[in-house]
Image (tube, rainbow, N blue to C red; front, side, top):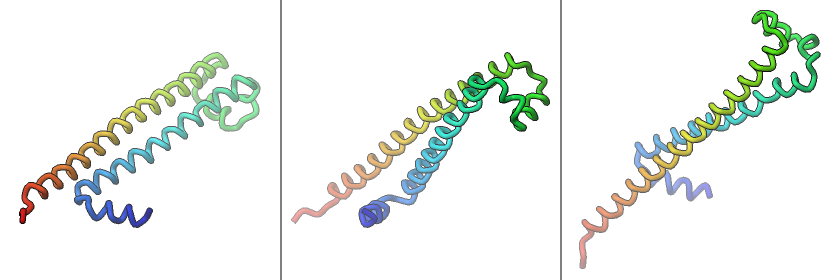
Length: 125
């Protein structure tokens, strides 16, 4: 498998290698947004299941005392934060899928054109 990857990288141009690197970075950020979306649900569900958590947890006390929020507002803001994180995650998934397909087709077209030119210019015997 490593040999196949080396052969593929040998065929690709420098520009295509950079594009593949950008696709890799977009996919890494996509996975980080997935983690953020999943983690954003925890505080909301934790507070819904145990409203006394705000009185026991140092981080909740610090954040919500500085923001001067009531318990109803806390639930609303935590819910909005969770929904917003999930929406951002989904929009980034759409972007990353679109970008990956775009780069995939550009590389395919480049390789296809290279092969086409090679066969057109080939000397027949």
